Every structure is written in C-alpha cells, then in structure tokens.
Image (tube, rainbow, N blue to C red):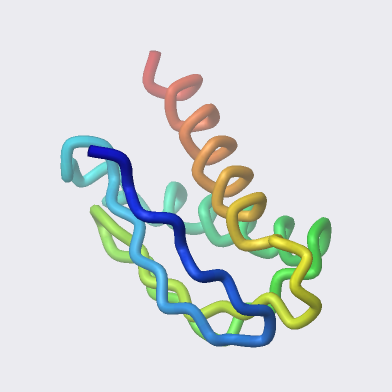
Length: 94
C-alpha cells in the first residue's frame, strides 16, 4: 500500500527522525556523527533550512526543522545529508 501524501505547510515546525540502515549503529564513531552534522549545516547553507535543534545518536537522529518560505527544502536537505554521509561512510569502510 502506498504511503499517504504528507500535508506540507510552510512555516510549520517539523520533528523528524531518521534511522540508520537496518537499525545498525553506523554513527557510533564521533567522526561519523560530526560528518553528519557538517552535512546538515551544508544543507542549511544550500537550501535555507531552518534548524531549530538536533540530536545525533549512534543509530538514529532527531531533527527539529522548519521551512519558513515553503520551498520544500526539508526533503532536499535530508536527501543531501543522508546521501553524502552514507557515501563517505561507505568509501571509508569499503
């Protein structure tokens, strides 16, 4: 069954959680968590994502974010952060 379409309202605060693949502890090293945060702030710079708060644990992250202008920056930002962090992790591990 397809996922229901999200009701996306500009200016709303969003609490997002994002888990690591297979719930593994892929962010257990400090350097991996720092890299994730670096990409988060790169997304802020590129797309204008408003970051209110965040917490990075060893197997998931919590984000409190907002898209003030309604430019659909949250999905773009998550794609950048998760994709680039995963690429760098895989390059280091493989």
